[in-house]
Image 1 (cartoon, rainbow, N blue to C red):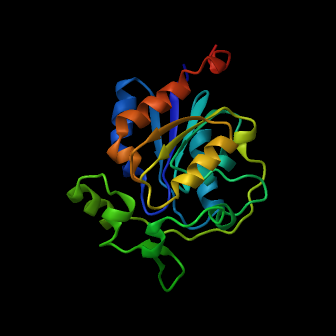
Image 2: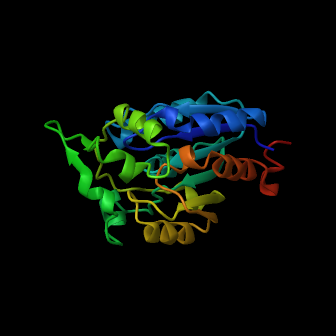
Length: 231
């Protein structure tokens, strides 16, 4: 079994969004690290993820939520990454931008509550955040998530050399997602050939369904395909 897990958050969140999953994985004796993304550019986000990966001793499972899926699609080419887990996440193909990928299906309803500030960073309206991002999370907790949300500067960089083409992948679909259309999630999961689970969850599935997410990550880490990697 692979013991190293690196978790990558997406837009409008930070590393604390993984707190419940981290606790469950640590109880299973995994070495878990959550990357704190600057969300200032795709290049910067991939760079810090690669740095964290370089600090891992041995094979690693790389996990991305939401926009974090774009990050792991690129950073997943690091030599110690053995598998990818997408959690309600974007999984772009070579030559795609995020906007092009999103345009394949109608936008999710939460998109109407995402607005740029004067410097071009995107935010979810704070009052709308609980319903749009975390509808199945306790309201008090969701309001805290809204208060600490990190803004996102969207990148139009075209993806190249997606790691899922050469790595085994897992995907968790959130069927009640209001930030990424569930139809798009189904499309991406099928396209990358991922082992897939579907949960009646909001976009914040790692917060509302940590047991299922932790179990999926643990399953990825114990895949028979990795026996030689940890020998």
